[in-house]
Every structure is written in C-alpha cells, then in structure tokens.
Amino acid sequence: MTIRTGAEYLAGLRDGREVWLAGRRVDDVLAEPVLAAAAHTVARLYDQQHDPRLREVLTYQDGAECYPLSLAAPRDARHLRRRGAAFRATAETTFGLLGRSPDFVNTAVTAFASAAPFFDKADPRFGRNVTAYHAACLARDPFLSHTAINPPLSRARSSHEQDDPDVHLRIVRETSEGVVVRGAKLIGTLVPVADEIVVFPLPGYRPGDEAYTVAFAIPVATPGLRIVCREPLVADPSRLVSTPLAPYEEIDATCVFDDVLVPWDRVFFHGDVDAANRLYDATTARHHTGQHGIIRGAVKAELLAGIAISLAEMSGTNSFLHVKEMLGEVLGALELARAGILAAEADAEVSEWGTLTPAIAPVLALRYHFPRMTSRMIEVIQLLGGGSLLSTPSEEDIRSELWPGIERYFRGANGVDAERRVRLLKLAWDATGSAFGQRQMQYERYHSGDPVRLAAAQYAGYDTDPLLRTVQRALHPEQPGVDASARVTPVDAPGDGHSSRKADS
Image: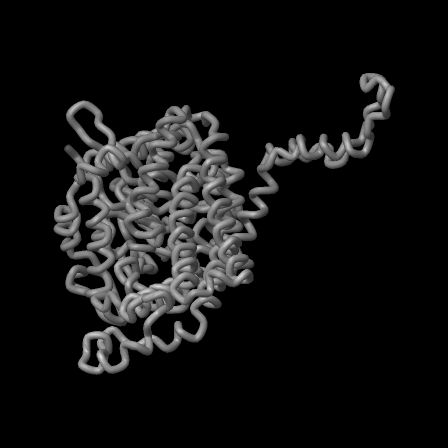
C-alpha cells in the first residue's frame, strides 16, 4: 500500500525547509498556527484515503498496491466520471475552499506523464524523466504544489527584456549534475506545507526567452529554495466560532530560487519558447486540472447557496418575493455550474496521448463565468445578512457571564436560538466579507490564469463552423415549394477561413 496517512505526511514536513513568515524564518511549520492549520487540513485528506467509506472513491487498486485516483490517467468514460467523483469527495471535505488540494497537481503530473512524447521532442531523456517522476509519485504519494507565474515587473516586456534578468526564473548554467536556476515564481499556494514543488511554464514567452522556459520538480527542502509567505489572513485559527473557515486558509507564497541545482533526472523541459507556450494545453494538463477546478468550484457554490438560503430562512425573509428571486438566481447559478461538469465529461474525447480528456469548452466557459457567479452569490449573502453581519458579538461573549443577559437580542425567527444565529452570521461573514473571504474571491478570479486570456482562448479554440452554417441558413431561407438542392450556396460565407486559423492556434 503506497497511500500515506496524515501522520506520515505531517512527519515529513520537519525537513529543514526554508520558510519565511512575517519577516522571520519558521523553524518548524507545524509550530506556526496558520501553517499548522493548513497542514492538518491536508493531513485529513490523506487520512480519508484510508477511510473505509471513501477508500474506493479516492483510490484504485493495482495488484497489492493502492494508489490515489488522481494519479491515474482516465481511459474511458467510467474512469473519467469516477475520477470526478474523487475530486468531489475531496472538495466536499474542504467545502471547495482548497483550490490546491493534493489531487490538483497530481492531475497535472499525470497528464504530463501520459504526454511523454511531447517532452521527448525537446530531449528523449525529458520524456523518460516525466514518466519516472509520475511513477515515483505513485510509489510515495507526496503532496505536490506548483508555481508557474513570473513576478509582474513589466508586463509589457518579455522575460529576457526585464531590467533585472534574474527576477523571472531562468537557467543560469548547466552542469554535469543538472541545471542551476535563479529567480522567482509565484503564486505558490500551500507550498510552505507541501512535500515537493512542480514548476512549469505557462503561455506568454517570446523569442529570446529560451533560458526562462524550464519545467522541473524538486523537494521543498532543496537548498537555495526560499519560501516567502504572504501575510496570514487569520489571526488565530483556533477561534472557530468567529472564523469557522480558518482551517482552509490556503497560505500563498513567493518561491525564490537562489542558484538552486535541479538534478537532470528532475528536469522535464527547457529551451523551446514555442513548446513552452503550448505545454499546458498540448499535454492536456489544462483539460484535466480544469475538470478538477470546475468540480471544486461547484462544491464551493453549494456552500454559498446554502448560506444564502439559511440566512433567509433564519430571518423569515424567505417568504418575500424579491428574496425568493435572489435565492432562485443563486440556485440557477449553482445548476449551471453542475451542468458544465456534466457537459465536460459527456463531451470528452480521446486525446492523441490515448487519455479520455474532458471537453475544454465547458471548462473554459465555467472558469471565466464562475468568478462572476460567485461574486453575485456573495452579494446576495451580504444583502440577506444586512446589518446583522456587522453586529454579531464575539466568540468570547458567547462564553462569558454577559451572554445570559443579552442572548435574547440575537435570536432568529421561528425559534432559532442565539448561538446558532451568531454562528451562521459568522460563517456568512467569513465566507464573504472577512480577509479570508476576499482572498477567496480574488483567488477565483485568477485560479486558472488571466480571465481575458481564458475568454480569448475560448474563442480561438472553439469550432465555430456549425454556428456560421446556422447564420448561412438564416441568411438564405428555403422558399416553400422550392427544391432545397436547387438553391445557390453563397461563395463567401461569413467567417471563411476562421476554423483553419483556430486550428493553427
């Protein structure tokens, strides 16, 4: 059995990694409350793989060994749906608030390994490396995080045109042992409590950027790798009444590489700008992580919809027509999210690498519109909560001698007791108005990359021919009594040549 327990994962975090938080080095991430809370949440996910109720959902058996389902490349519709069910089970544990749970990067590495011939084109050893790394992940079940974004110094310039050539991560030299890299990458979500970090390029490189196009994986404790955490958004993770979502504070970090040696057997790719720009899409990593992302997003939408309904019912406003309309709007958005998942799975196709790949069009559509949908859900929650969201007593008040004297002022409609109402209002605020809630909203906007690029990619890759043929039929309607075969087909259809351009892109 290769699947790890939560205790085994936690024990591996005391490895001398260099993590910085609030201007000081953290000697032990498990002794730091915010980092420890995140680590223990991940540990719960590892333990679920051993839960008899979930083991068959989250893992698969191969001989005597048991592996995470997120590390298996789907070959048929049943397998694809089963993997989706595993994604959902993990997301339900964290209410969809952990965008970089262990199954996310597992899915990307699995897609890379299935597309080993893509990496072979740069160098045959790279294809062998990515295949071997996937096998190592199967054997060890590590928690992988990733980072792929360059620091945004001058967005108008390519990597090699920056004033400081060592800000964007690049290869500074090659040795017999491996490549030496220098620079930074972001956003390293949960990297401080991960076992390994996977680095790969996203589209946007230009000729001259060859040294900056590198993909590899190394342990977080690799010498020279410095993890600089952003400011925590939760002051005290133990105050679970005031901040009930604190266990899901998904700490982000900047990863600074100070002449880090990456062994050759951990290098997957480098030196090709065109291939670097195509890597995430060509390997179908975007498609497979996209399935994970939209399933997790739907689970998060369920939490937000449930909070909105609970607030309306608790206050007795659910009988008002305008409130019913808002709740119907929220539920409609939730159903659209669920429908997108079904469409991505139902329209899946076999890739050139032999994997059954979720349809990218529903994935891109949801990833573009989901932030807008959740933004509206958040607004509805805030409207339904009203001023009550700003007047709840503290967690300490509920436990104090003051509470019996003021408890009746905080009760809800229809016999809802005061503590339950306060807890719901705290949850609503934590999900929508606190620093944690605002980070969640910002994170959703950029979860899958620049939303403008997402929408452009939807158009560039979409098969619009059926839509244009519909326009042609509307422009030249059939006349009653006229044989359709005798009609003249226009030579110049609107958008002629469009599909070939998209195919090239």
